[in-house]
Image (cartoon, rainbow, N blue to C red; front, top):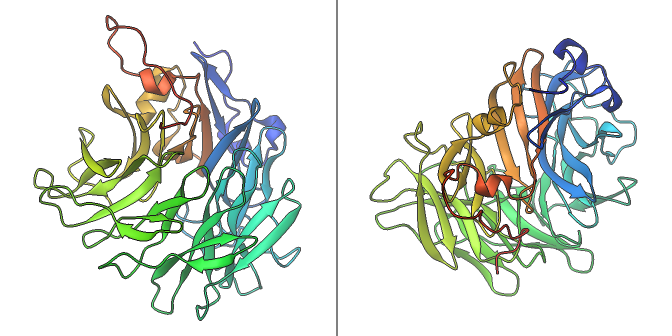
Amino acid sequence: MNTSSLIPRGLAAACCALCLTPVFASGVAFYAVGQLPNGKANSQIRDAVLDGDEIAAVGFATQNPASQLNPGGAGDTAVAWTLKDGLVPLPADVPGLTPPAVTRNITASSIAGRSLRIAYRSLTDGTGQNVMAALATHHRKDITILGVLPGMPQFSAAVAVSADGRVVYGFSADPSGHQLGFRWTPSEGMTPLGLPAGAVTGPPAGRATTADGGMVVGGSPSGPGGVGYVFRHGHGISALPLAVGGTWTTAFAITPGGHVIAGTGDSAGSPTGEFLLWRDGKVVHLGLPGTETGTNFTNFGGMASAGRVLVTFDNNSSYLHNGHGWFSMKAVLEGAGIDLSDWTNMLTFGVSSDGRLVFGSGFNSTGSEGFVAKFPKGYLLNYGRPAKSAAEDDDRDGDDT
C-alpha cells in the first residue's frame, strides 16, 4: 500500500513545491510538479536529470491566466523544477515581461546532466511572437540569447544540449514555417546543419544529441514523406536508412555514445509505420505496442541502457519497450503501487540516460500537469522479466559501447 499520497488536486496548482507530497511505492516515486502561482493549469516536463540525489527538471507552464493556448499543447513560460524550489520561470530576454494572451510555444527542452545548463526558448518582446533560442547557465542566473540563422525571421528554439552544456542544437523557422536545424557553441556561434536529400524541413529532436555534442538526430515529425537524419559534426548530415519496403523515417533519440538511434518509419510489414532502431546504421524493427495500429510520427522519446530501454508515446498513450516487449507506462507506474486514478492521457516525453527518471505530462481533474517518476536502477530494464528467468539484465548507465 502507499505510505503517502498526493495532496488534493484542487490545491496543487496553488501550492509551492514544499507542499507537494510524492507517492512512493516499490522504490518508485511519482512527483506531480504543480503549476505556476495564479497561472493556468497547464504544465509539462520535457527533460530531467539527477544532480546527485536531487532531481532537476525543465519544461513549460502557463503564467498568464488569460492565455489562449490549448491546454496540454503548449505553454507561455519556460520553467525549471526541483523539489526544493518547485516551478521557477526561466529568465526572459526582457526582465519582468509577462507573456501576452497569445504567445508562441515557450518551453525549456533539455538540461545538461553535469552542468545543469538549460536549452530553451525565450520571449524577446511583448508581442508574444518573437521567440529566441536561449541557454541558461549559473543556476538559471545568466541567459545567453543564441539568435537565429542568417536571413530567418525572429523565431528560433534550442532543443538539445551536450552533457557539459557547451554544444547546443536547435532550429530556426523560415517564412514558410520550415524548421531548419542549427548547431551553436560559444566559440563558433550558430551554424546551419543543412537538410538531408529530399527533406524540406528537419528540426533536431528534443534532447537528441550525444554526450559530447558531436551528433544529433531529427527529421520531420509530420508524417509520410519525412526524412529522418543524423548529423555528425565535421562530416555533415545524412538520411537514415529506410526499412525494407519503407518510404519515410523520423528520429527522436540517440544514445550518449551515438551507436543507437530511435525513431519511426514505415516498412513492408508495417505500412502505417512502426518504431525502429538503427544500431550502427542497421535497421532493427520494434513493431508497435499491442493497442496501436500505426504511429503518429512522434518526435519525442528517449533511451537508456545502450538502447535496450525505450520510452515514448504514440496516439495519446505512453509506452516502455525493453527486451521483454512493449508495456503501457501508466501500467508500469500503477503496477508499482502508484495511484493514478485521477490521471488520463499521460504522455511520457523520455527517460534520462541512466534509466532512473521518466517525465512528461498528463490530464487530471485540474487540467494538464507535468510529472517526474523516479525508478530504482535497472527497474525499467528488467520490467516484465519472467519470474523464473535467469539473473537480471546488467544495466549500463547511459553508455552504449
